[in-house]
Length: 266
Image (cartoon, rainbow, N blue to C red; front, side):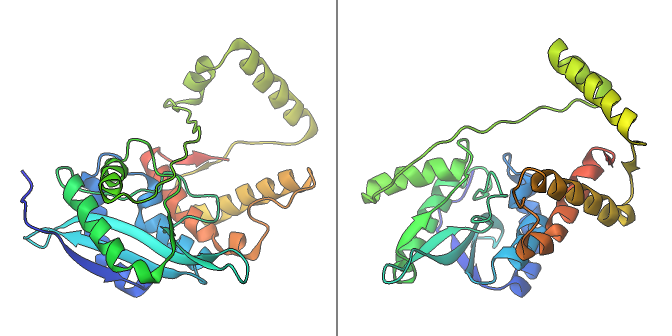
């Protein structure tokens, strides 16, 4: 049972200080049942180096009476709009580049209400630092989001809530099992395009199984991604300087996922 004592807060405003928080951050995600790659140090810190240079980092750690980390608000302050209507916007760290999803406020089970109330108190104390707050891509099952909405209603804050559809494909252990998962029509398409590919090009499947191979494999993947969008007359996600420099983000997270799934194929 969580203690009823107030939570204490610590603010982190640069990446150097976040490095010190990393072990506790990872331990908290291990206890958080809705943890995803997009809440990890491996995703968010490289993302910040690529996309956050014009924003102000604002990460708040919440601790219980024993000084254990029980909640983490990973946020940033940016500006939006055009002069003379420039506004400071408080948003989640990782938001703004359209390649993060399920951004969240991880909290230890049993501390959801106290975390939300403490976060709201912190936000009220910082009202002079921002004019708008926008927490995008939060999953509907997020305990912190549900608790915050209740406290916003009590405080009579103006809240606009929008929902959008999200899709996911559950991947089985093998390619053969995945084919069985598809309809006969989709399996026929794969067979057709596979034969067409083999007729036009010399092809082979290659499995990346070590971290040292990852940069070259990912560069090949990103190169194909760029060519695919350029053939359609569009730049693609990795054409900009920021997109190119953020490849290390995907290297770290791809390797994390690859370890869990015994490598990946290109």
